[in-house]
Length: 337
Image (cartoon, rainbow, N blue to C red; front, side, top):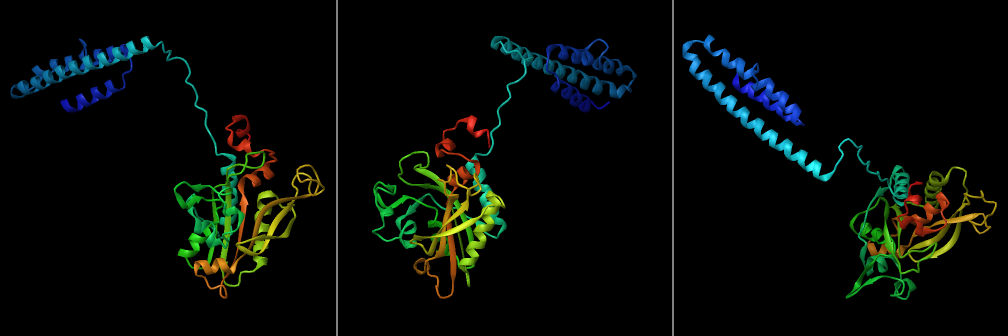
């Protein structure tokens, strides 16, 4: 018999023992009066004379080793049993099931929007939340006298007059265009910060998604088609869209985009202010001055950009009337999504 394989077998049996009673059964199996060690000892007289001494010594060594293993296992089991008794733990009681979380509704909407644009060939990129004044304003054709550059409208970092918490995700547009050449098609989700008074529709921190596309012969009709496809994917195929002239420093021409109210289907209700329309985003053709800042030839390249507040999209999509609900961590609210 192979003494090493027998020891490995016994150690395997001991590893599966979880009680003193089970340990005693294993001990009897190997060390009892009719156990395996006794059988090995009884087989020695039947061996050749020259083998008896060596084999007998091996059996005796195995027996001593097993006695140590059983003693060590018994101490371990008794220690565990003592701890359980002192803790008054009823191991027969069912365990406490941990509650599983799920993706936050804002993250769900971000993923949904990015997926729609990703299918249209847009890449998803990220940018830093601490930005330079140049990327946040100057590079986007926002002049020094613009109200948004005032300290009352932007979080400037103390002792760092040229650094601030970004007020929109548009600075990533400048970062990308300064390092890459057209064609470009990207969407930029992320947190932004503005010192707004907190109410049902405003927070000092919220989420935006910026999108832009730059190439040769890009037209306003391309922007319209892209946004219509996005809106129908997010809000439903039966919605209608309209574009209203507006002003943004970084686009020209600029528009605000509305969809027919998803609550009243355009008939007029309290959600849409009896107008039948809901504003969802701002957009326009990228201003030539922005191209100049990043070193693009505006006589060769054209492009469009758009930006939307994720919380607003989520509120319209799910009929939520208070933006603060997203961040109060009320599980009764969050479990609905």
